[in-house]
Length: 119
Image (cartoon, rainbow, N blue to C red; front, side, top):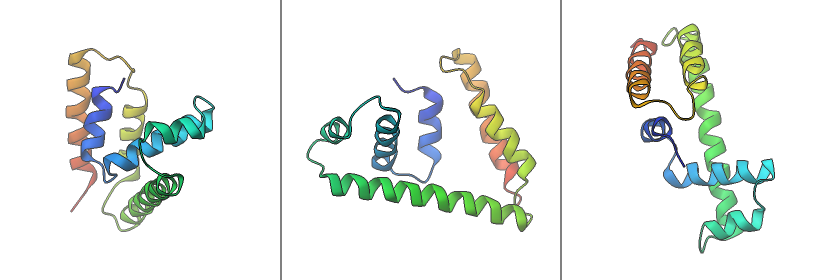
């Protein structure tokens, strides 16, 4: 079951829904929760090659995003300190927050992201 915070973040990220699903499945395979065959089966008619292409695209997008944040920090467009606060906030969010907690965190995340980009 996916938390509303995850849905909130996914709606605002640059990964496609397919890339997010493939990345989640790949992490489950890495943890040993499911087999690679089960991951492929859950994607329907997707071939192994197509699945791994999508995983590779997701990895490239995340990598590019990290470099973008690093460059933005060097250019003075973002503050790494504010970004660290944002990461800490999201990482400490309980998996089953109350609806009020969730609304507060989503509002805070929006505000911090807007503050983070100093353009």
